[in-house]
Length: 337
Image (tube, rainbow, N blue to C red; front, top):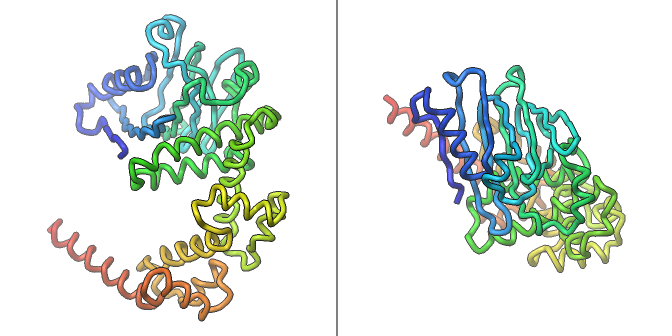
């Protein structure tokens, strides 16, 4: 469901103009400039989540300016939030300035002039961007304006939860059914609102339902980060988030899509083990070591759970996966020759 385009097939002298036109049409009218157009590279992909759109861009460093004249020419009236995957930028808007590097989040308003400069010595830019209609965020615009052109750390707190969820969207949203996309869009809005509110010390402005959905995503991120801990239990998860075990179970009943806390922990552990067992380069690692790495208490418990989930023992699954990987490599080598 990702719509993907690339400048790679175009003559070198046309790539920059193609990208500038793409940004002006699909994002907002913007003045882009670059020192050397001959070396310019760019690609883009867009996923429509109904409420919001998520876009990912890769491009050579450039300068981007949004002037009053360009705003009058066309304004989607959006807030936009970017996650820098690679590279760096310096953004100015609404009397604010910030420097943003890989892993950081940054927030801007399409209805205000802005200026972004990307240093060439930081290398190519990789950016994930959310396009959010102004009316979807349940926060007062006056307070939101304080965060324009401000660096939001993506390494801890709700910034890290949001960054992690965006990474999951990039990797897996294209495999979802069309009817799942609006729900994903709602989760994105809740996480953005919660992240902004946390940075504004304004959590009380969020509706209770939005706070609950943001909390369940924080819990999912916490669980994924601690799967290797054999003491990861519902009680430990509840304590880490300052809620009771009863409240935790109620959250999962409301937002867990039929999955309990314990079931999610077990499923995510099994998925990590399955991924590791499928890697031919790790074929020498004992199965029990894989199970222990992801928090299983013993090989017998792991083997029973794995067979129940996937219909094969861990050893059988590994052998089949390695065989298929080798066959694919052989087929690929034959095709190239």
